[in-house]
Image 1 (cartoon, helix red, strand yellow):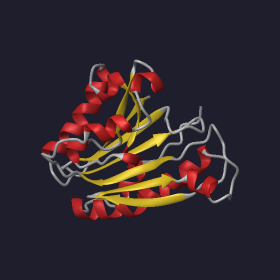
Image 2 (tube, helix red, strand yellow):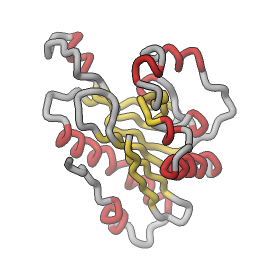
Image 3 (cartoon, one colour):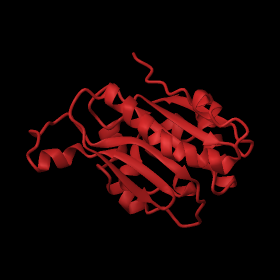
Length: 202
């Protein structure tokens, strides 16, 4: 299976010695293009990319269902609209998560996705992530931090929550037409200016 890698180290090498705000501005401009380019490689069909903003996050979204609704393409029972990437700055919140809206997404989690799956967030509610397009079917052991890799994932989310305004991103990788990625790539720009990027099987 192709890796669809982005050379983040090479990107940041262009900014040797730059301050963190300069790096954030650069990544905010460059990453959407890189996400788009790699997404087109893994998606050999017509796409309908849109950009949504929620709080401090930008969501790049392939709104395929709108193409179906307007008759641009015929309806497909297997192709789903899905997130291409999310990026922005963490904004920790004390607001309670809207559990009823989350439960209403698709339906019963185990019924539709299996007992080892949660309704995860590309960007956690605790750092300012929303619902709707921000929700995806995620491995339970990763989402809840039960496994070794899950603990790494949760530690990255925790860093973003403990350091408000941290730049971070989440890029899903797909091997099928559904909205469930086989892997997610989570990145955090540390206070040191280093970029911490990890991939998690899904």
